[in-house]
Length: 294
Picture (cartoon, rainbow, N blue to C red):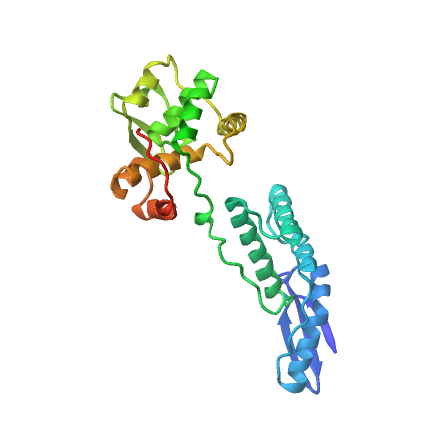
């Protein structure tokens, strides 16, 4: 005899009795639909334990079925955009496997692993198959070479945006830090910017100073505009797989290539610790990139 019931917490449980014995297991879900789907496997497993004293190897459902249950779990605190993204990543994995793009691949791995862990916790699969390589800090290593930088600096037509791009590279500052820059934050040899966690000082070289001298007022771009405009310009110029933040990564990497100690590079980039810098730049140290003078 098996009884499916819900506790005051909202979690469903299954209680099974046989030969004067009873055992109960949490189904780890507040969804009645998922509880019904899980019930058959869990009931058979619990009966096997009661009658034979051995755990029964649960029947596995196909990954495609698991994905649909996972995506339709109303308990998941996802926004609509997150739910859509997860659906695209999981369906893409089913149809084509892992994507080639490093960033998307990392996101897909984390999503597939989360789905498998979810299924294992609810007794839908015997053991989650964890795919290695989903570390978010391993996600992107794109840097620009000298030719790409020179193309950007000479062929971005909009002069205001051209100066913004060059200033970002020459300082290594984040896009939000530059777009929020005020006149009072600009001094002779450095600027002060509002970093991720605190105000920090950014030393500027002669090339960055020359750009500031040419401007009557500073930039006031939104971060969305910066990203969209930069990608559009890169596509026009034939520069593939490019993001605005890659300028900052290239700045840091070229400093390391030129012999700057990683501690100094960490300070220039405004990282919270040298460990952060090492984590971001260590994978790049085996990659040959042409030097580009700042």
